[in-house]
Image (tube, rainbow, N blue to C red; front, side, top):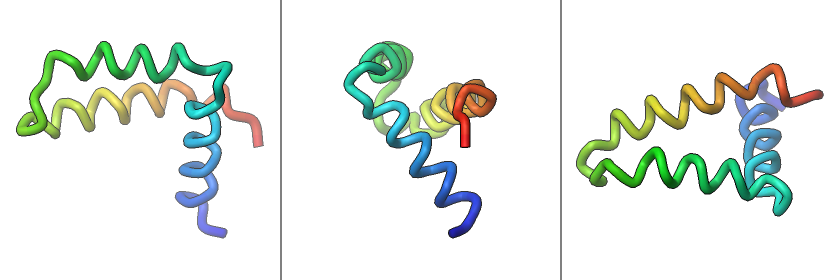
Amino acid sequence: MSVFKLYFELGLSHITNLQAYDHILFLTILCAIYSIKQWRPILVLITGFTIGHINYVHI
């Protein structure tokens, strides 16, 4: 399994966990001020949020 796929699957399971609804809410609020045409700032926000959680996810 590639490292990217491993982290992608771990991250997806982490934020889609029903006990982690605060993560989805936080990202939704952050992205709410942008339109779809402003996809780059949205990508930067989500990437920063993901990088901030790297130490949290345990392999």
